[in-house]
Picture 1 (cartoon, rainbow, N blue to C red):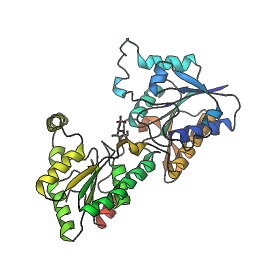
Picture 2 (cartoon, rainbow, N blue to C red):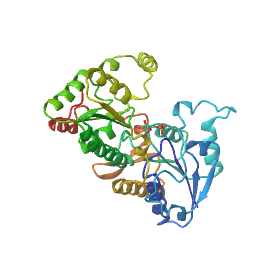
Picture 3 (cartoon, helix red, strand yellow):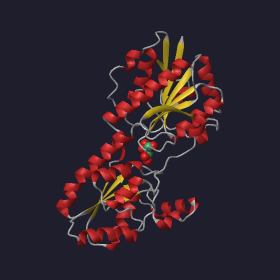
Picture 4 (spheres, rainbow, N blue to C red):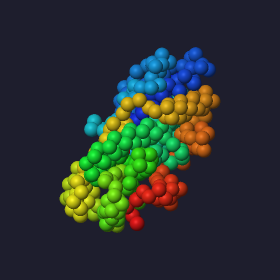
Length: 358
Ligand code: F6P
């Protein structure tokens, strides 16, 4: 008997179901003696032994379904070694569930935090295979995470729709795109949607440069300006602050989010009306785009191959178009950020996009 535990952890994204389907279809195409234990709501299900027994049938018809059939939750890595309110040792509890059910392996779908815990479980002796999910595309070791392209589609659609109303009203529009630590979605949606200014956490902006870029457009007879700003975009002054000073400053300013701060700073310097649009969690919702369905299916099927061979301790990844395995020890704790010198940034600048820095 092959006993597989499976869980989805952290913020959800599109194609989680497609990836799990890929794993199960792959394993069940080669073996009939498979038991699948689906842990509910991420690591919480593994800690508190909350699971449901699933069959390959449960994974049929879910290729196109958004969200996750297992539910998910955020269980911060830094709290994993801290006992719960009843004194329960979470790591020991997860190991206990694993051994009690006599599992052969765990398939864990998640982003950065999830991978740190997955690696911890590997270090504790459990057989783990992971799949890289997140709209943020910030997992080190893979060129792409599933969820990313779908989120780019949604954010691009938002920018597309804003274009027409921005033109009609001659307004400056700020579209706030998800990504606190990295700007991948903002960068790609910004380029795809033809944003005029793109502000990323990786390239601190100067408000004077941003305002000048808007003025220049007006002088050229352009009636509107669209700014795609990542949730974590930061000004040059703020980038110089220590983490503590930054936190205190933000708490004092009390803006609902970066778009509101930016809108106020721009509005102070110009008459043109400024408006804000925040697509928020719509970027993580709905059906996965075809690219993500394909990527998730490939990663899932490749994970199935590892499981059938009993080869554990890896994240499945895509590199240069090929699916490969990357040791979990290498992935855990590393963030893949946008390189300010990357080709895509240079090419975007060539087309006249301002990153608000120079
Ligand atoms: O981890 C992905 C992400 O979508 C970030 O880009 C975003 O800032 C965050 O999750 C939102 O998290 P929550 O769903 O907890 O509000």
